Length: 114
Image (cartoon, rainbow, N blue to C red; front, side, top):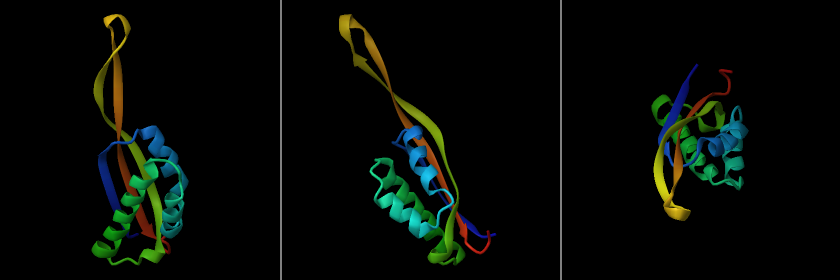
């Protein structure tokens, strides 16, 4: 089974928000997934759309697969490190903020291979 992957690490989107988008496109044909991502009003959709297009480009250039025959066979979002920030609070205290990051992996494969 031919497959191609694209991975992005340290994406500045919290994993919980990115998983909402990835769960929608998992198992879809690539053209349908890109259409869904284009009209999804979640901020993570634009970044995940870029990752899907990168996986399609990897499939075309590295493995000679056709973009029309591709399906998103696997898509995962893992948690990455967090930026730690301190915010001044009342009575001289400090509030701790964590800006979370994600590691996203998209794998596309041939339609007839499934």
